[in-house]
Amino acid sequence: MLLSETAYAKINLALHVRQRREDGYHELETLFAFAEDGDLLTAEQADTIALTIAGPFAKGLEVDDTNLVLRAAKALQVASGTGQGATIRLDKRLPVAAGIGGGSADAAAALRLLTRLWGVAIPDAAMQEIAVRLGADVPACLQSQTVFGSGVGEKLTALDVHDITGAPILLVNPLKPCPTGPVFNAWDGVDRGALDVQDWRHARNDLEAPAIALVPEIAEVIAELKVQPGVTFVRMSGSGATCFALFGSLDDRDRSAQTISASRPNWWLLPTVLR
Image (cartoon, rainbow, N blue to C red; front, side, top):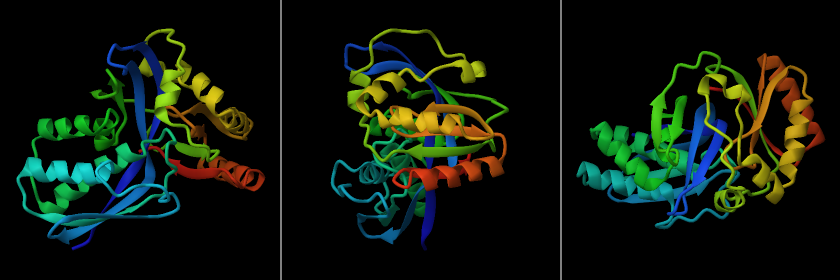
């Protein structure tokens, strides 16, 4: 039996960095949202756990102990006590080091997928513990719904934000890698205040300036999105380099995607909607 699961693209609608901790991590506040599209994982029963990676962004991804999909599968196998294995295929459709979930979304999708494939029942607390060990964004990606994140992003609070679900969104990436570590390290250390999730449109992404300093093309993406007809909001997601624009209609989104694709053929675009 072959099962599939989408690794939904993660979008930080706002991201406030509050302080740098002694352990090197950063305290932050963020509003997580998720697109309807992303990478695709498929799996079927096997005696052992194995992974293959294909798709437009598969190049350079290793199939070894550093791979978060394999780590997620092995952690779930141990936690559930199952002797089952799986042959997993990752169709890598999202850019790498792009600020939209990447390996975290893939790991979360693997946990959801293998829970179904193996027919195992894991208590929510145990599943969250697995997710936290895999990475700070994995707990949010496991839910893949709009939530407020604090701590390093792993402390989640459910939200009822009415103007998000179904919103047309266009993701654009200049196809310049923007690794998370260097962006956080370039943050200026200034706490500019708390995030009011009900007023997230007037909030910030505190990583935007350091990301632009490292990848100047991000500023070009933001400028291009801001002049599109029908756009209602533009911001960078996560630590970059992906930026997003919200639109008043699907038609406006699609026309803008066609315009940008024609003028910037080397950029990556994903027209989708928020979950």
